[in-house]
Figure 1 (tube, helix red, strand yellow):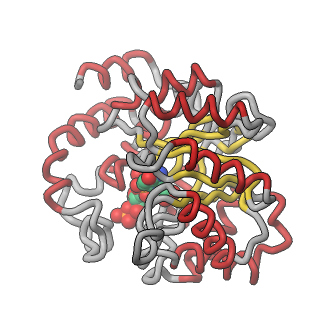
Figure 2 (cartoon, helix red, strand yellow; figure 1 turned 135 degrees about the vertical axis):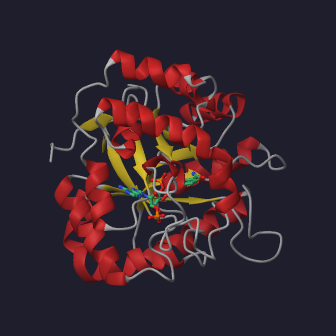
Length: 319
Ligand SMILES: NC(=O)c1ccc[n+]([C@@H]2O[C@H](COP(=O)([O-])OP(=O)(O)OC[C@H]3O[C@@H](n4cnc5c(N)ncnc54)[C@H](OP(=O)(O)O)[C@@H]3O)[C@@H](O)[C@H]2O)c1
């Protein structure tokens, strides 16, 4: 196993591991707590010190933060300062007009609820999980600033903002002397949209960036090429973001990528992660491994030599 490499988050003092662990689907109500404990422990051993959460991660919403918080308190409390923990608010969490989106009311109540579930005094990063078309950006940004000034977050981040929204938000945050630490958005071999949207803006604003669904929720491991594994995310009845139809729609492209990986003597997982790490604007690749073995395979993508040019060209030729 190569040693985990760290990258600086924009112009900040923060270093993040090239591979970070997200808790979107793997720490919820149905997860095996002993596997979750093992994943945190192994992640820390491997140098994966950044854990990415959100209030709505589970399912059900809130359960990933509860599971993580319990484990932190029981087994990892002495390691809090070695960890970089993020959470987010901005998706539906509770009924009524204040349970969703980007108002000051929702974001600050959401952060308080997250801190209670995780049994933490503060998070390292608090994100606006998505832009809100109906709330003035000033209000959303004001809530992020307040989260830092109140000591409940050390840094702030933005997720899934358009280039114009991201630029404006970064300007507002800089004016308040609470610079944006990180932009979080999707990037993988099947979805390269951010190459012309988020990535140029991250460079321009000199923030960090962290990319999610690097394996397209598992499709870019090649696991669906031979059928539907029973324990996979697409087979899970509570998975609303990946199902057999979505898998089928991308199957031909995944098969072509698998061929490129085979020709290069790499697993498709390694190809997918190392391809993302070729971009220096990316601070960290946010994986959603569900088992220790998956985590280990993903971690080993850090510290590898750049992919050969002919492999990069073959990938580009598919678009
Ligand atoms: N800001 C946002 O709006 C947003 C949105 C989505 C995600 N995120 C963040 O990004 C994180 C990662 O997203 P993601 O879960 O979609 O990432 P992903 O790494 O693309 O997908 C994770 C899934 O891939 C499979 N997998 C991972 N490593 C594997 C390996 N080595 N071998 C075989 N299968 C492997 C597992 O599928 P099986 O379960 O089928 O085994 C796992 O559930 C989330 O946890 C969250 O923190 C943020």
